[in-house]
Length: 304
Length: 296
Image (cartoon, rainbow over all chains, first blue to last red; front, side, top):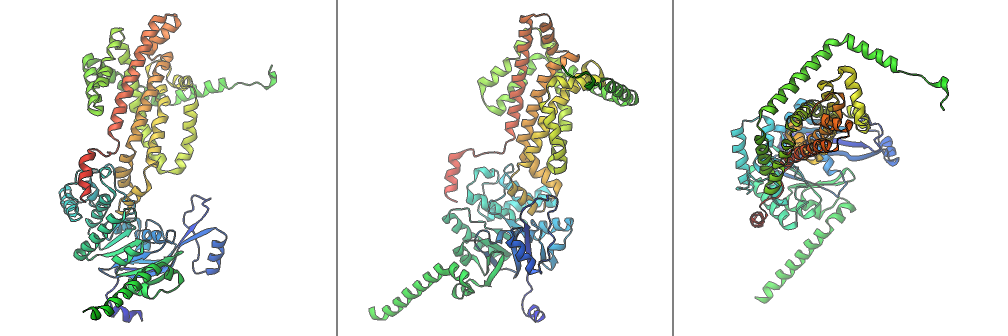
């Protein structure tokens, strides 16, 4: 079946299969960071979870991201979405499963290959910006290129272009501390764009900003996406943001993905009570607009 | 008092051990000794070569460019005049030479040690109690090992000063590196920083204020120790203090003591102001920025 699928559809850029991340809870033995658990042994895992020995942050998660789409991962805090996105960069080592980005298995990369993957294949935007306070906006944006070892002229040229793209022209020589939150996140986005990586990972990039700015940046992201057509994984806990941005979305709960689908599918056809509760408000407004639209339609001919 | 058959001494063994050490590793100690001595003498020479008024200019320029406080900078630049007026200038330079030598060696050892401590946890576990021990020990105690190995004179004085002033820079380097915000480190890693790049581009620059506070502390400790080290033959201001204690010459002691205080204050302010310059920039021109950010 999968063969037929791969012939028919475009092959995914990111392919996550049966991904698990299990954290040991009480880290008494400091040296032992990796945990040897057979994740397929469900009885042992659930028993260990009950005993409070482990926390399962990501539980048997599979999904694909296709070229040019914005894939939303949504869930409440603690549902494992931030862990999941960090696994894609291997900022957190996975316990089991595979992650393929452009057909390269991330989980089996050596240290050197991993550095290369991070430099060329994917770029990340963080909730808390993660800007370097001792470098100017220009140097912050050029930072990834510097790590790659690109010559100075080249990286400043690219960085200047990226800064202009996110609307921060004129701010190149300021330090991040002088910028507002929204502007700092623009720097964060420029820093990711300048890498020109096929995959963009965004970990709640607009959650810390006030609603108006966050809305502005959402629009801007959509505008930028029009031009660049990247494959974006976007983590958020805000449903309205997810619905605005997402081509497809996955809803996470306690480490597992409960439902994957387009925003419409999820709102109109929630898989279970949890998702239904999540989208309840949205459904209500939808029904209201339908209702008022219906009223309008009904009243229009009468008034004219 | 104490039961007699309980007592025993290790003094003889210690003496034997030191003798053995000196006999079998004589070339090593000689090499260290000449190395430190040449460095010390060279520094002393340079310090004496510089005319007195140039020090004041240097102090003023450094302080004024970093702090922008005219009166404070002027006062601190003029203070050293007092040392010259007491006819203690040459002695002060001698002390300063010992301090500088000890501090330079301290930093050469201390900063890499601090980095290692921050990088390797097991190393930190071993070093930390040693540093605790070094800092709780009275400064006089350091005279003993230095004297044991190098006898009397300037070299053991530098060595004792070095040991005493080493802990703060190690500690503060380690602390600064460990307190670099995790989210910034994570971001740098996500962009493909190797361990070395992370250290060079992110961790050390961000730890710089802490490291420089360590340099400041180390310098101050060295200055305190250099007075004590006069007991094993470091000349300079300490010797002057020691002499006046022995002769109960209060006035002379006061002059020497005051000179030490002046040196301490000036060095402290200068190193601190340099440290401040390294702090990550905060919001400056606020009004203009608010105006601009309003439209973004």
